[in-house]
Image (tube, rainbow, N blue to C red):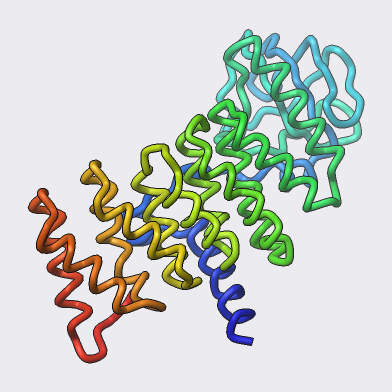
Length: 317
Protein backbone atom coordinates (compact mmCIF):
# COMPACT_ATOMS: atom_id res chain seq x y z
CA UNK A 1 0.00 0.00 0.00
CA UNK A 2 2.84 2.40 0.84
CA UNK A 3 4.48 1.77 -2.53
CA UNK A 4 1.17 2.33 -4.30
CA UNK A 5 0.60 5.62 -2.46
CA UNK A 6 4.14 6.75 -3.24
CA UNK A 7 3.68 6.06 -6.96
CA UNK A 8 0.39 7.95 -6.92
CA UNK A 9 2.06 10.88 -5.16
CA UNK A 10 4.82 10.90 -7.75
CA UNK A 11 2.23 10.97 -10.52
CA UNK A 12 0.56 13.97 -8.89
CA UNK A 13 3.94 15.68 -8.64
CA UNK A 14 4.46 15.18 -12.36
CA UNK A 15 1.12 16.68 -13.31
CA UNK A 16 1.53 19.64 -10.98
CA UNK A 17 5.11 20.22 -12.15
CA UNK A 18 4.19 20.16 -15.81
CA UNK A 19 1.72 22.99 -15.28
CA UNK A 20 3.43 24.79 -12.40
CA UNK A 21 4.30 28.46 -12.67
CA UNK A 22 5.44 28.95 -9.08
CA UNK A 23 8.80 28.95 -7.30
CA UNK A 24 9.69 25.38 -8.22
CA UNK A 25 9.10 26.13 -11.88
CA UNK A 26 11.35 29.17 -11.63
CA UNK A 27 14.06 27.12 -9.94
CA UNK A 28 14.36 24.21 -12.29
CA UNK A 29 12.89 25.71 -15.45
CA UNK A 30 9.94 24.56 -17.51
CA UNK A 31 10.82 24.08 -21.16
CA UNK A 32 8.12 23.31 -23.69
CA UNK A 33 5.49 25.44 -21.99
CA UNK A 34 3.13 26.75 -24.67
CA UNK A 35 0.24 29.24 -24.27
CA UNK A 36 -1.94 27.62 -26.98
CA UNK A 37 -4.36 24.72 -26.76
CA UNK A 38 -2.90 21.28 -27.52
CA UNK A 39 -3.42 20.16 -31.09
CA UNK A 40 -5.64 17.18 -30.25
CA UNK A 41 -8.13 19.58 -28.65
CA UNK A 42 -7.96 21.90 -31.66
CA UNK A 43 -8.54 18.92 -33.97
CA UNK A 44 -11.59 17.89 -31.96
CA UNK A 45 -13.05 21.38 -32.31
CA UNK A 46 -12.45 21.73 -36.08
CA UNK A 47 -14.47 20.48 -39.02
CA UNK A 48 -11.62 21.09 -41.42
CA UNK A 49 -7.85 21.51 -41.25
CA UNK A 50 -6.17 23.04 -44.30
CA UNK A 51 -2.69 23.97 -45.41
CA UNK A 52 -2.93 26.89 -47.82
CA UNK A 53 -1.43 30.20 -48.96
CA UNK A 54 -2.92 33.65 -48.34
CA UNK A 55 -3.94 35.14 -51.71
CA UNK A 56 -5.84 38.25 -50.60
CA UNK A 57 -6.95 39.94 -47.39
CA UNK A 58 -10.14 42.01 -47.28
CA UNK A 59 -11.94 43.77 -44.42
CA UNK A 60 -14.13 40.78 -43.53
CA UNK A 61 -12.64 37.97 -45.61
CA UNK A 62 -9.37 36.20 -46.34
CA UNK A 63 -8.96 34.43 -49.66
CA UNK A 64 -6.70 31.38 -49.64
CA UNK A 65 -5.29 29.31 -52.49
CA UNK A 66 -3.19 26.18 -53.20
CA UNK A 67 -5.20 24.45 -50.46
CA UNK A 68 -4.34 20.97 -49.25
CA UNK A 69 -6.84 19.38 -46.85
CA UNK A 70 -5.24 17.65 -43.86
CA UNK A 71 -8.62 16.81 -42.32
CA UNK A 72 -11.80 16.88 -44.40
CA UNK A 73 -12.13 18.15 -47.98
CA UNK A 74 -11.74 21.65 -49.44
CA UNK A 75 -11.60 23.40 -52.81
CA UNK A 76 -8.16 24.56 -54.04
CA UNK A 77 -9.26 28.18 -53.52
CA UNK A 78 -11.62 29.23 -50.73
CA UNK A 79 -12.48 32.01 -48.28
CA UNK A 80 -12.63 32.34 -44.50
CA UNK A 81 -14.28 35.03 -42.41
CA UNK A 82 -11.95 37.62 -40.89
CA UNK A 83 -12.78 39.41 -37.66
CA UNK A 84 -11.61 43.06 -37.81
CA UNK A 85 -11.45 43.10 -33.99
CA UNK A 86 -9.13 40.09 -33.69
CA UNK A 87 -7.70 39.24 -37.11
CA UNK A 88 -5.26 36.36 -37.57
CA UNK A 89 -1.65 37.54 -37.95
CA UNK A 90 -1.40 36.70 -41.65
CA UNK A 91 -0.07 38.57 -44.65
CA UNK A 92 -0.46 38.00 -48.37
CA UNK A 93 1.88 35.19 -49.43
CA UNK A 94 1.99 33.49 -46.03
CA UNK A 95 1.66 29.71 -46.02
CA UNK A 96 -0.40 28.60 -43.08
CA UNK A 97 -2.29 25.75 -41.45
CA UNK A 98 -5.80 26.69 -40.39
CA UNK A 99 -8.31 24.90 -38.16
CA UNK A 100 -11.76 25.77 -39.51
CA UNK A 101 -15.45 25.27 -38.79
CA UNK A 102 -18.37 25.18 -41.18
CA UNK A 103 -19.91 23.05 -43.92
CA UNK A 104 -19.00 25.44 -46.74
CA UNK A 105 -17.01 28.59 -47.45
CA UNK A 106 -16.62 31.16 -46.09
CA UNK A 107 -15.41 29.06 -43.17
CA UNK A 108 -14.91 30.29 -39.61
CA UNK A 109 -11.43 30.23 -38.09
CA UNK A 110 -11.44 28.09 -34.95
CA UNK A 111 -8.03 29.28 -33.73
CA UNK A 112 -7.24 32.30 -31.61
CA UNK A 113 -4.79 34.67 -33.32
CA UNK A 114 -1.92 33.42 -31.14
CA UNK A 115 -2.62 29.84 -32.27
CA UNK A 116 -2.39 30.44 -36.02
CA UNK A 117 0.40 28.35 -37.56
CA UNK A 118 2.58 30.10 -40.16
CA UNK A 119 5.00 27.96 -42.16
CA UNK A 120 8.12 30.07 -42.62
CA UNK A 121 10.27 27.56 -44.52
CA UNK A 122 9.27 25.14 -47.30
CA UNK A 123 10.54 22.15 -45.31
CA UNK A 124 8.05 22.93 -42.55
CA UNK A 125 5.09 22.21 -44.81
CA UNK A 126 5.98 18.54 -45.23
CA UNK A 127 6.77 18.07 -41.54
CA UNK A 128 3.59 19.75 -40.30
CA UNK A 129 1.39 18.01 -42.87
CA UNK A 130 2.65 14.61 -41.79
CA UNK A 131 2.44 15.46 -38.08
CA UNK A 132 -1.16 16.71 -38.14
CA UNK A 133 -2.41 13.89 -40.33
CA UNK A 134 -0.78 11.34 -38.03
CA UNK A 135 -2.30 12.93 -34.92
CA UNK A 136 -5.74 13.17 -36.52
CA UNK A 137 -5.60 9.48 -37.48
CA UNK A 138 -4.99 8.62 -33.80
CA UNK A 139 -8.15 10.42 -32.62
CA UNK A 140 -9.73 8.59 -29.70
CA UNK A 141 -6.52 6.70 -28.83
CA UNK A 142 -4.76 8.75 -26.11
CA UNK A 143 -1.89 6.29 -25.79
CA UNK A 144 -1.09 6.58 -29.48
CA UNK A 145 -1.51 10.35 -29.38
CA UNK A 146 0.97 10.60 -26.50
CA UNK A 147 3.47 8.52 -28.48
CA UNK A 148 3.07 10.88 -31.43
CA UNK A 149 3.48 13.95 -29.26
CA UNK A 150 6.62 12.53 -27.69
CA UNK A 151 8.07 11.83 -31.13
CA UNK A 152 7.62 15.56 -31.82
CA UNK A 153 9.45 16.33 -28.58
CA UNK A 154 12.31 14.07 -29.63
CA UNK A 155 12.53 15.11 -33.28
CA UNK A 156 11.41 18.76 -33.37
CA UNK A 157 11.44 21.33 -34.91
CA UNK A 158 11.16 23.76 -31.99
CA UNK A 159 7.54 24.83 -32.44
CA UNK A 160 6.33 21.28 -32.99
CA UNK A 161 8.42 20.18 -30.00
CA UNK A 162 6.65 22.74 -27.81
CA UNK A 163 3.23 21.61 -29.01
CA UNK A 164 4.23 17.99 -28.43
CA UNK A 165 5.24 18.72 -24.85
CA UNK A 166 2.00 20.57 -24.17
CA UNK A 167 -0.13 17.87 -25.75
CA UNK A 168 1.57 15.00 -23.94
CA UNK A 169 1.28 16.83 -20.63
CA UNK A 170 -2.45 17.44 -21.06
CA UNK A 171 -3.17 13.86 -22.06
CA UNK A 172 -1.12 12.42 -19.19
CA UNK A 173 -3.03 14.68 -16.82
CA UNK A 174 -6.29 13.27 -18.16
CA UNK A 175 -5.15 9.63 -18.44
CA UNK A 176 -3.00 9.00 -15.38
CA UNK A 177 -3.21 5.25 -15.92
CA UNK A 178 -0.79 5.72 -18.85
CA UNK A 179 1.89 7.44 -16.76
CA UNK A 180 3.84 4.34 -15.59
CA UNK A 181 4.51 3.01 -19.10
CA UNK A 182 5.29 6.44 -20.52
CA UNK A 183 7.56 7.31 -17.58
CA UNK A 184 9.56 4.13 -17.98
CA UNK A 185 10.01 4.71 -21.70
CA UNK A 186 11.26 8.28 -21.15
CA UNK A 187 14.28 7.30 -19.07
CA UNK A 188 16.41 6.51 -22.13
CA UNK A 189 15.39 9.79 -23.78
CA UNK A 190 16.38 11.76 -20.68
CA UNK A 191 19.78 10.05 -20.62
CA UNK A 192 20.54 10.57 -24.32
CA UNK A 193 23.37 13.15 -24.50
CA UNK A 194 22.81 13.70 -28.21
CA UNK A 195 19.19 14.76 -27.81
CA UNK A 196 17.88 18.33 -27.69
CA UNK A 197 18.37 19.72 -24.17
CA UNK A 198 14.75 20.79 -23.74
CA UNK A 199 13.56 17.38 -24.91
CA UNK A 200 15.84 15.70 -22.36
CA UNK A 201 14.58 17.88 -19.52
CA UNK A 202 10.96 17.23 -20.45
CA UNK A 203 11.67 13.50 -20.59
CA UNK A 204 13.31 13.67 -17.16
CA UNK A 205 10.16 15.26 -15.75
CA UNK A 206 8.05 12.40 -17.02
CA UNK A 207 10.60 9.80 -15.91
CA UNK A 208 10.31 11.27 -12.42
CA UNK A 209 6.64 10.29 -12.20
CA UNK A 210 7.00 6.74 -10.85
CA UNK A 211 9.35 5.15 -8.36
CA UNK A 212 10.83 2.55 -10.78
CA UNK A 213 11.47 5.09 -13.54
CA UNK A 214 12.99 7.74 -11.29
CA UNK A 215 15.28 5.13 -9.73
CA UNK A 216 16.34 4.05 -13.23
CA UNK A 217 17.02 7.69 -14.10
CA UNK A 218 19.16 8.20 -10.97
CA UNK A 219 21.05 4.99 -11.68
CA UNK A 220 21.61 5.91 -15.32
CA UNK A 221 22.92 9.37 -14.45
CA UNK A 222 25.19 8.00 -11.72
CA UNK A 223 26.78 5.43 -14.02
CA UNK A 224 26.89 7.43 -17.24
CA UNK A 225 30.22 8.55 -18.67
CA UNK A 226 28.56 11.67 -20.09
CA UNK A 227 28.58 15.05 -18.31
CA UNK A 228 25.69 15.64 -15.93
CA UNK A 229 23.06 18.20 -16.85
CA UNK A 230 22.19 20.41 -13.85
CA UNK A 231 18.44 20.49 -14.45
CA UNK A 232 18.13 16.78 -15.13
CA UNK A 233 20.24 16.01 -12.07
CA UNK A 234 18.01 18.19 -9.89
CA UNK A 235 14.85 16.63 -11.29
CA UNK A 236 16.19 13.13 -10.68
CA UNK A 237 17.21 13.91 -7.10
CA UNK A 238 13.89 15.58 -6.31
CA UNK A 239 12.00 12.60 -7.69
CA UNK A 240 14.36 10.21 -5.96
CA UNK A 241 13.65 12.00 -2.70
CA UNK A 242 10.09 10.77 -2.93
CA UNK A 243 10.88 7.34 -4.38
CA UNK A 244 13.81 6.47 -2.14
CA UNK A 245 16.27 3.67 -2.90
CA UNK A 246 20.05 3.24 -3.14
CA UNK A 247 20.18 4.72 -6.64
CA UNK A 248 19.78 8.22 -5.25
CA UNK A 249 22.89 7.67 -3.15
CA UNK A 250 24.85 6.67 -6.25
CA UNK A 251 23.84 9.85 -8.00
CA UNK A 252 24.56 12.03 -4.97
CA UNK A 253 28.04 10.58 -4.59
CA UNK A 254 28.86 11.50 -8.17
CA UNK A 255 27.06 14.82 -8.38
CA UNK A 256 28.49 16.46 -5.23
CA UNK A 257 31.97 15.98 -6.73
CA UNK A 258 31.09 17.05 -10.27
CA UNK A 259 33.42 19.54 -11.93
CA UNK A 260 30.49 21.77 -12.94
CA UNK A 261 29.46 24.12 -10.10
CA UNK A 262 25.95 24.34 -11.62
CA UNK A 263 25.53 20.60 -11.08
CA UNK A 264 26.68 20.89 -7.46
CA UNK A 265 24.30 23.81 -6.89
CA UNK A 266 21.51 21.72 -8.39
CA UNK A 267 22.32 19.03 -5.83
CA UNK A 268 22.14 21.56 -3.01
CA UNK A 269 18.73 22.78 -4.17
CA UNK A 270 17.43 19.21 -4.26
CA UNK A 271 18.64 18.08 -0.83
CA UNK A 272 15.52 19.08 1.10
CA UNK A 273 13.64 16.76 -1.22
CA UNK A 274 16.18 13.96 -0.73
CA UNK A 275 15.65 14.27 3.02
CA UNK A 276 12.04 13.11 2.62
CA UNK A 277 13.23 9.51 2.50
CA UNK A 278 16.89 9.66 3.56
CA UNK A 279 17.61 12.50 5.97
CA UNK A 280 21.02 11.13 6.96
CA UNK A 281 22.25 10.95 3.37
CA UNK A 282 20.92 14.43 2.63
CA UNK A 283 22.71 15.80 5.70
CA UNK A 284 25.99 14.11 4.71
CA UNK A 285 25.80 15.59 1.21
CA UNK A 286 24.92 19.05 2.55
CA UNK A 287 27.87 18.98 4.97
CA UNK A 288 30.22 17.87 2.18
CA UNK A 289 29.15 20.83 0.05
CA UNK A 290 29.24 23.27 2.98
CA UNK A 291 32.75 22.24 4.03
CA UNK A 292 34.47 21.19 0.80
CA UNK A 293 32.99 22.89 -2.24
CA UNK A 294 35.34 25.36 -3.96
CA UNK A 295 32.47 27.75 -4.86
CA UNK A 296 31.29 30.11 -2.13
CA UNK A 297 27.70 30.14 -3.40
CA UNK A 298 27.49 26.37 -3.26
CA UNK A 299 29.06 26.29 0.23
CA UNK A 300 26.51 28.82 1.48
CA UNK A 301 23.65 26.80 0.03
CA UNK A 302 25.06 23.70 1.69
CA UNK A 303 25.25 25.54 5.01
CA UNK A 304 21.59 26.59 4.69
CA UNK A 305 20.54 23.00 4.10
CA UNK A 306 22.58 21.80 7.08
CA UNK A 307 20.87 24.36 9.35
CA UNK A 308 17.51 23.40 7.95
CA UNK A 309 18.03 19.70 8.55
CA UNK A 310 19.42 20.24 12.05
CA UNK A 311 16.08 21.55 13.29
CA UNK A 312 14.22 18.99 15.43
CA UNK A 313 11.38 18.86 12.93
CA UNK A 314 13.16 20.74 10.18
CA UNK A 315 11.06 21.29 7.10
CA UNK A 316 11.83 19.14 4.13
CA UNK A 317 10.21 20.63 1.02
